[in-house]
Each structure stands twice: as structure tokens, then as C-alpha cells.
Length: 280
View 1: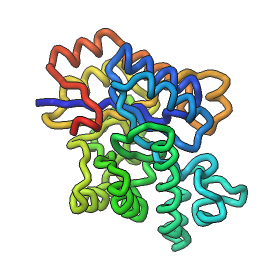
View 2: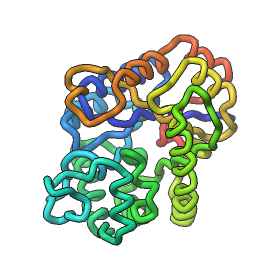
View 3: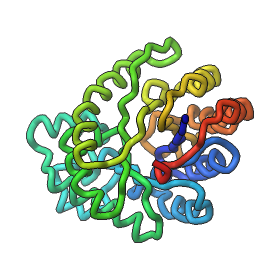
């Protein structure tokens, strides 16, 4: 059988992103989302999630953008001189390679973000991370040790099977290939710890450049087992314009495709079961 988790990243980033996530769930094929505990629209995301209990909610662990949830003095190796995260997973990687990333501080921030969501009244189905920071071996090691303390049983493994696509940016294609190689280490650690993950993952190569033909083709060739499709629906409004994200107009495009009648029909015609991470 074929099962599909359609997850929206960045829940809590802005009100427009939150609204789009809910629309993609109620009117389309979206089944799951991951919330950013340190972003401005977090409380709005919590309110909407509680009003739509059929939507699975996980944590979008964020140690690359914005201010931390934990006290900044306790996690200095994760922050820049302004007391904010470094901005990119590449910067985080370089700090780790230089031996300047303190693993206990990742633990502190991870627990702070998990506890903020749980204390807000949202149970967590799984965990992934902003900019795929948890693909770093140092970070996934912390995650596998910590999440069991909070009853979280599943983690995204962003290991996308590489396939050249002329409609995608070549930098993203090779970035997905590099990420998949990092995930070989992550996969081993997740397996040994008994953490659940999907059998297949899609979305890195096409981030920001979805097309209807690509999405319909993906649905048609979906493998057996559990697959996850990463998405970023949203509205390109003034609030989004004030955030540090390269994904703007593409968010509305993804919302349109996630609610497209032909896409919904294609999922139904192939008897693909739409689930969240709570279902694996």
C-alpha cells in the first residue's frame, strides 16, 4: 500500500503562512505541519492547531534563524554577536567543523523548544528542522537522545533519491544530493535508536519551484510504503516580506497546488492513503 504524509514546514513563521497551512489541510491534501517555537506567529499557530485536531503537528526545530527559546547565555555557541542564530545551516556546519559547536547547548535549546510547544497544549507527532539542520551528525545525535524523554517517536529523514529535473535549480539538485549523503549517517543513528521515519522523502530538489506536472508525476510514481512530501504553503504578504526567507511567491503557488482538484483526484484515483506522522 501507499501512504503519503504531506507536511508543511514553517508553521508559526507568519499569520499568512499559518492561514495557508490550515487551508491546505481543510481544502487539500496537507496532513501534517511542523511548528517553529521561536517565531512571531507561534501563538496563532497553536490556536489554529487546536481548532483543527485532524492536522498532525510536529516541531520544526530551529537553530538557524531568529532568537532562541532558551536563555541566550546558556547556548552561546549557537548564536552570533547579536544573540541570534547564525542564519544558515552552512554556517552551523562550519562552526561544528571548527569544533566550536557545543553539543550540550543543542540539547538545551532542543528541550526548550519542545517544552514550549508541549506547555502550549500541543502534542508532537514528530520532529524535523529548519534548513535541515538535524542532518548534521552532531545535531541528530542530540535529537535521538532527547526526544524519547518527551514521547516523540518519529523524525524526518530528508534523504531524497536523487533524480535530475530540468525544472529545478541545479544548485538545489546537488544540494539535495549532498544532504542525502549526510542522511546516511543520520539514518544509522535513527535506526539504532528505534526512531521511526518515512520510507521515502521528496521536496528538497523542488523547493520553491513546484509545478503541477511535477506534482502529478510524483503522485503517479509514489513508491510503496510511507512517503513524506515537504511543502511550504503561505501568502506573500507584508508580514512575510519582513522575514528572512527566500520563499515568497512560491508559497502561494504551493498552496494552489496542494488544493488543486486534479491533484486531489490523482491521490484518490491511486488509492494513496493520506496520513500524518501519528500514523506510522
